[in-house]
Amino acid sequence: MHTAVIVDVVRTPAGRGKPGGSLSSWHPIDLAAFTLRAILERNGLESTQVDDVILGCVSQTGDQAMNIARQAVLAAGFDESVPATTIDRQCGSSQQAAHFAAQGIMAGAYDIVIAGGVESMSRVPLGSAWVDATPSPLIAGRYPEGLVNQGVSAELIAQRWGLSRADLDAYSAESHARAARAWEEGRFASQVISVGDAATDETVRPGTTVEKLGGLPTVFRTDELAERFPEVGWAITPGNSSPLTDAASAALIMSEEMANRLGLTPRARFHSFAVVGDDPLMMLTGPIPATHRILQRSGLTLDQIDAYEVNEAFAPVPLAWAREFDADPARLNPWGGAIALGHAVGASGTRLLGTLVAYLEATGGRYGLQTMCEGGGMANATIIERL
Image (cartoon, rainbow, N blue to C red; front, top):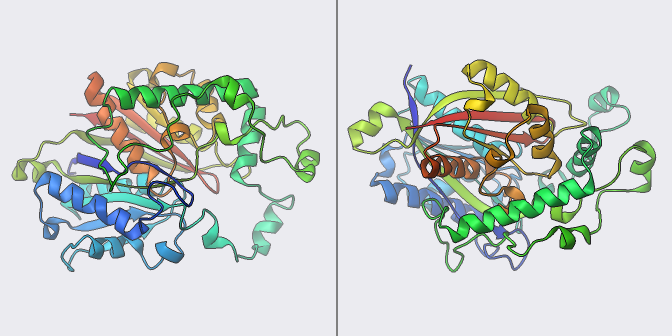
């Protein structure tokens, strides 16, 4: 079994995923190509040395259709011999891309892979890929009361774990404060590459306060849903949710032997993997069973993990996870999370990976855990070890 290592991770800044956002004028193919070129140039590689490119993308329609990974490889000027594929595991797409890359290396099928993701939510709105989809009679038969969107799932999680609106808003304000502090301290300098005039995450709001968040309206309550779920308090707002975001990210993953041969320094190795399915109504609780599974497989305890990146799709997700594991809040998304740093769904997995690697390096930590809730009730989990 080969050792799969992370040599480098890059990402664009996060642009607001709406017309006029800092990256909205960039075609998503070109945005992904920008990160692919950057990771080759930073590490002195030729594209012909890359065995495969695996990118995540959720809304694979419009400007993101036709296997956007292959389009990005060609747009980046890579040799035509370099293959590429696009995968969709919803919000965990690029985390899954990293899993596939690392597992292929460990099995000996690859030497060098670039894994990453892209999403332009300003140009290809979330949900546009399935806007004309018709419901499955079999699924309707299995869930006769109907499934719900992710915002309602977040409301159900807040209710089940006893999380108040004040809890959610306080957590969200802290996410912005941590992200703003990390930017001020230069923590993202090793991973963020400027794209034109965009150099920092447009989604971070340093002046966010609990009082300001408390004035925002809730967005997912309807009379029909309130009748169906009378116990729900309806606390999810734009302020305690991740914003629509444009971004791309990429990780250079290879065998340790190849890194040594090329004179490149591995920054971390992949230690353990897990992927699970979970209740599709609650939908966003998958990180909990995924964490249980990966800790069991790794032989580690949560106390041995120096940082946990639990994606902040909505504030109840990391808060419920933390309560379930009695996790140290100081280790949870210590440089802020998606509520502040943005959630360009196809790109978020490798964005979290880059943040985790950089945090372990900055603090001297050894192990990091990354987990991500995913549409349809799934979750990936990854443990890395700093080298």
